[in-house]
Image (cartoon, rainbow, N blue to C red; front, side, top):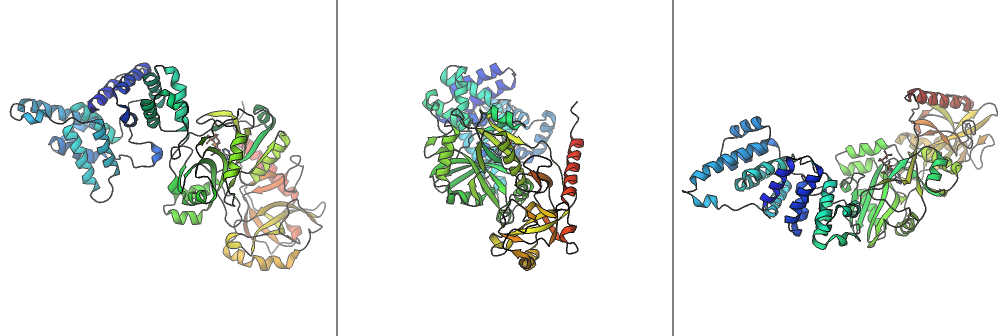
Length: 602
Ligand code: ATP
């Protein structure tokens, strides 16, 4: 197709603001476009060469290069191009002006050099191909190659083509055409009516590549997208959740019984697998595969299907304890340039929560219970690649308990998912089939506490064969008991860990000490004697720990989220440790601080 057809449409689009008129101009353009290149035309309208999720380089040609290319193609000095650029404020206009001037001159010269007038016309296909070369040229000499290719295009362009070529290459096309207008135009062109737009939209939601959808309808008709399936390698637009904060209301909203899962605080990952090939897409559909070679490897190892699309959350973890780390840890990893170093320093785990496509079958229309069955079948769970922590319940109390456990374990809250037959995967939509239940406050632990060791856990990873975490308790003077507060596995230096066995061994006992109150069972019990200084992200309520149990909330005690060991307090005996009353006071103070920080309800 002649490039002129495309730029004339661009020219018309630029001068109007009515969406209806824009749609009609696009319809006219699509009718003139051969089906085989409609995908390229859609990308060009969107101002790109390929969808963002491909992770391919953008054109990224700077102003300076373009000035050189224009000067070269129109045989004027760079300073002249710069002067015109200043005058018009737009390199597109500058190039157009120069081409017009040239054409005026060429008009006079026509009689002398007739070949000038018979110059080859630019085609959309040819231009697209050249622009791809420009985008992909890298390394030494690529700068001159880019300038040469662009100058070559400009030399053959009409003035109008020059205007849009420059703007496109500079990334400033800005036609103001959104996806919705393109979808309307596709519906009218290929189905005869805008009423087909939802069908196109549904297809777009499961294959987030509008150009690909355009090609399917142009080549095979609107019917072809009725049964369109997800395609491995093309991201599906994610299903999103609504938010509520009352457990009873949440459960009644999803129809009573629900699947409750931890809402992990990491990065969403849509993982595609075909054979040994793996793609990972973010929530915003960027291709993040290169950031997670470890996740890709685990996918190959633990996903048994040959062709599948699953979703999960990637979370930073402590490899020695398996505990989750705060979201910021994942961000540290993303900021590191050397990916191999990053994955050693910041290991991650993947918690899967859905499967959308498997072995040729589109599962997005299937209710969640069926999707889960498939998920269980295709995942060989391992420590760092497993299905999200979950339960099924219709009880608000159970939901609340699970929520507290989730927070204590380092999750952000829970996701409550409808379990009824209509609970499909609503690609690209935020709806009431998924409801997130998060805390509506964020607080900080401002002071350290001194807690007594009452148990220890065997280490994993590089701590294998040694102790890797401690169970610690606060002192309750009124009953002379030690009540559990948290399990702490972070903050130890290598030297601390080296010495841990020697420090604990003398106090290991075969039974729970009679002065210890704990529902959590460590690998070994320890007689209350050693005191450790601990800090955490915040104090939190816990269904497992016994410190201040039932005092703030029925069935819950006070615990510490993301606890870290600071040092041993050899100068303190167990009865000198922080008391349960002090922890209760600290918790109340923390609540007051949160209340004060909350904007007034009026
Ligand atoms: P938020 O800021 O709360 O993450 P959001 O707008 O990014 O909001 P929401 O739909 O509100 O997205 O929340 C869903 C997000 O929660 C998902 O994008 C996903 O990253 C994350 N998530 C963590 N655990 C789960 C889970 N078990 N099921 C679904 N999503 C989960």
